[in-house]
Image 1 (cartoon, one colour):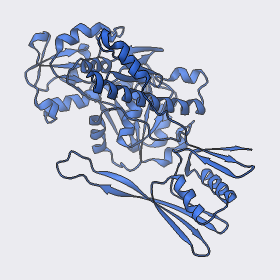
Image 2 (tube, one colour; image 1 turned 90 degrees about the horizontal axis):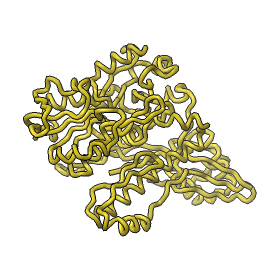
Image 3 (cartoon, rainbow, N blue to C red; image 1 turned 135 degrees about the vertical axis):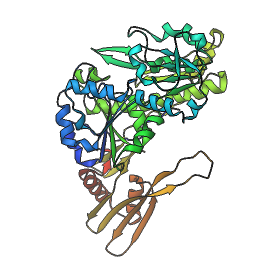
Image 4 (cartoon, helix red, strand yellow; image 1 turned 180 degrees about the horizontal axis):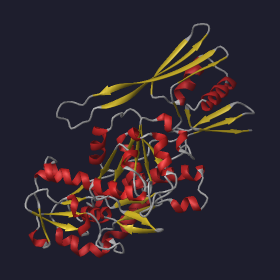
Length: 448
């Protein structure tokens, strides 16, 4: 399942103080956000002091136990007292194996084979399972990293085929990591290939729910959460699934974009490209499953690249021809276009507003947002969620009242105003006021 970024209005931040007072909890990725593998990025310590340690949580896909990562950060200059907690994939793996309460682990027994470097073995030491260096003795596989940073996924093809059908635990879902301007292979890419070959894989870490479910249990104030990361396919997708706001940090995988003069417009297009790429991959996967019995052959590597596993040689031409004919709706920017000369107003589908009240002449616009709780039926495997409930009221001094109960869409506000026969000039003035107040989640473009 691929997930899109739902937020359609992407502010371009230059300093943490721009949002520090808006959130109760700040979740930071580590490699690529806090440090580059060797040293802290500039101003990280000052940034943490401005936020406050009680609000800061670190969430990393590192296969190492948390205490080892904390020790590394201390050596770089980030003291343990500057953040509330550190959660790593390695720490989660250790407790899952030791407690054996996760459904995937309950069925595991006997010995396991470790695909990775010995230094990372602390994630499964003293968990009750026995490590073997001989593959044929292993009942399951744990992968933490490639054996060499210069390896490719193709180098493991034969080994992965020999591992089948043993279940696999992937302790670092990252596909790549950047070090000294070079992208190096990570365990996530190897595990993804194993899954494509038909293997059963448990991914521990971002963007998968296990990491976020654990973090949600220990967060002190979970009302307003924002996550910082440098990777779309892990940090951004994971925090989107968790229902959090996100910040893409241009110090890791996308550092080269910043050097090339990256700006706000480029960022918006990049976010749109990621959503569109996710839609393309999902369309390909549905097509492949229904017509060629291929399990999810399309994987989004970044907003510009989709990795595709091809069927047998005899099927490749019709397969690629079918992909060419798939229809995918591209993502668009939330935008309001105003023709100032004649009062024409055009809205795109993603335009939305937040809680706001505006008075213009005889008109008063008030938008309130609450929440209903959606409770699934018992044993339905559903999830209890809060569903936004928005009331939009438009009043005129004469006493007329129009109420729309739905999502806080700008289209509904405009419809409410039109019921009271508001003039186009009133609409334009009100929209500009809402935008100035920061409640309009869209760009306004004036022409004419």
